[in-house]
Structures are given as structure tokens and as C-alpha cells.
Image 1 (cartoon, rainbow, N blue to C red):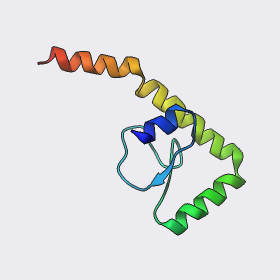
Image 2: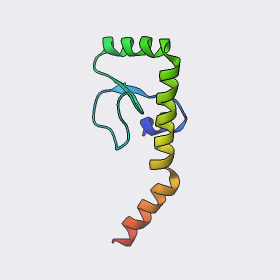
Image 3: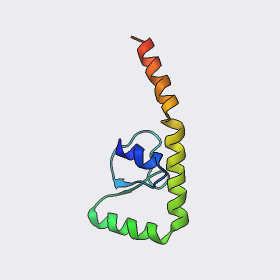
Image 4: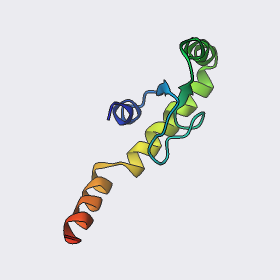
Length: 84
């Protein structure tokens, strides 16, 4: 859940490569790294490109705010309960 908290707060998420929920796309809504050295390189590159970093942070925040909002989660819960 930490991923959603970071994105929901408007922060850009830098995380290890892996399988992420729908909407979390490397270079678009999050940034990933494949090793410790790559993580350092990603941080340096992102610090040098504030517009790109801010665009990714905004896109991640927008994605989480719409796709995983409390309202959407509640609707999914109601649908699940109704199917029981």
C-alpha cells in the first residue's frame, strides 16, 4: 500500500522493478530501477530533470486519484458484497 500512499500524496514513486497494479507504468506514472546502482542513476537523472519528475508525479497522482479513489473502492466493495 505504500505505493498508493506515495502516489496519492502527489509524490513521484521510485521503486524496484516488478509487477504493479493496473495504471502503474514505468516512466509514465512511476519510475523503477533494477539494481542499487541503477537506483542511484535514476535519482541523479530525476533530480536533473525537474519537469519530467513533476510530470510523472502528477500523472501518478491523477491515476491513483481516479482509478483507486475511495469512491471507486467503495463501488467495487459493494459489487463484491452484492455478488455473495
